[in-house]
Structures are given as structure tokens and as C-alpha cells.
Image (cartoon, rainbow, N blue to C red; front, side):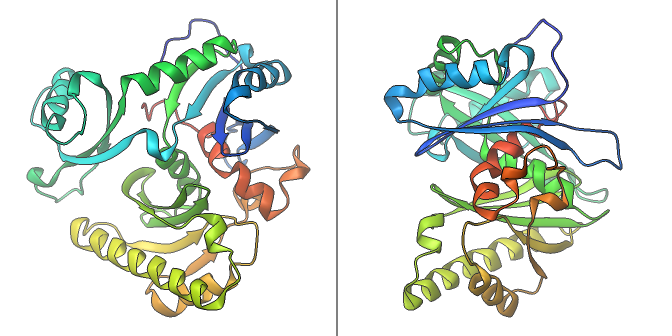
Length: 317
């Protein structure tokens, strides 16, 4: 899904994400270790669908978008992430082979699909036949509309990415050497579970519980949701154990949520075999230039936007 950019840009990525109540922007620069990636600026503007272009134009001016490498994320309903067996073909034929395999897996014609692939590396001693990949598919119309929107707002959009990769970027900052990491975040679309290892995405699951539902105070409903979340986590972690014997998941990290999630954390601690922690973004990002990100509510709002802005160009999508 990458576009082409010729002019020299400032280091780092400027990310724009669309939320139900507005638009988020974040600019992040990666610095040489041991320095943390630095969040240089963030912004949020309320808007509805009709005013998105005008709000994007304002944010583009405020953040000098023309000087940056710019990226955005698709919403969860705008694409599919499908696991497929890696075809035994030369690299230049890979996308064509994947497209052929996907033609019966989509509910629309393959010619109407934009497709990209993500490799899922195998362990050193794993048989070649176990090699799988993720295929990212979206309708051409979705991609074209997003490109047109950013073009109208005069934002030089270079990459259209997906939330799984944004979350992967943050998860990779927390990985211990030689160990995998599970991360669970919540937003208005639901819960997103990822498992990463060596900076690569190995598992992704969406859980149909939004952040608003997660924080509802009714005790019986809350307990039922905790049980659903835990069951999905148990199944997913068991799948990783069976499918990827070379990965040991060190812990589960809960992304920031604008409310008290001690009940969920305690429930998970009691029912999972891995340690459970709650993430504070200041532990993995330099937030000194953006004091507005010190509270959990702001960290939750900007979580995916920051992840998108942490993009590695070599992990092309």
C-alpha cells in the first residue's frame, strides 16, 4: 500500500488516525539506543465525517505535513488480515501467488482488492511446510477514497497501514531478548490482541468488546466481559504454544485505558499462566515534549496513532 515520495523529509513519521469523534495526529522520532523514541508533538480535533477533509487540512498546516513522511491507519472494518500458507515461489511472484490463493476467501471479486503481505518468520528448526504469511486485503475503493481524502487535504500520504502493525511497533519496544510479548488494547472498535516476537507479528485477534463496554460499572456484566476476554486470551496463547514452539510469551501487557482496569488485570492474573502488566507509555517513549500525554485517557486516545508513527520503513506494508 505504499505510495512514492521523492523529496527529502524530516526524520520520523507523522501519523493521522480517524476516530469516531475526531482525528488524531502524532509525530515521533526514533533516536539511537539507548534513547527512547521521542514524541515531538500530538494533536486532536473533533469532527464528523463531513468535516474530515477541512480538519485534515488544518492539522496538515499545524504540523507542516509537507515536511514529513505521512501515514494513516485503516479502521478494523475496512480491511481483512488473513493467514495463508506461504507459496513456494520467487519473491517477485509472491503477491501474484497470494492473490490467487485469496480469490475464494473474499466476499468480493479479487480484481477489486488491494493486497499486501506480511511474513511470519519460522523458527530455526521448523519445517518449511509450516511457513505462513499474513495477507492484508482491502477493497480498492476504500484505498482510493482514503488517498483522495488526504490528497484533497494536501497531505503527502506515503503509507496506509493497519492497527495490528501500529500495535506491533509499540509491543516491539517492550520485548525481552528471545521472548515473545502479548499485548491487549481497547478502543471504540473493540479489543486487539497481538503476539510479537523479534519485532514480528505472529498472532492477531479482535475481541468484540469496546473500551466503553469494558468500563461499564455493572458488576455482573463486567465479570462476563472479563470471562470472555480471558477465554479468548487462553485460546490465543495456547495457539501460539502449539503453532510456534520457538516462542515463549514472557508476559501480557494491557495498553492504557481511561479508567480503572484493576478488575480486569486481577481477573487475568488469576486465570492466565503469564504475568500481566499495565503499560505506561512513558516507560517506552520520551514524552517530555508532550505533557498532555501523562494521563491514561490521553494515552489511550493516542495509542494507535503513536504506534503508527513508530513505523519502521523496512517493515513495508
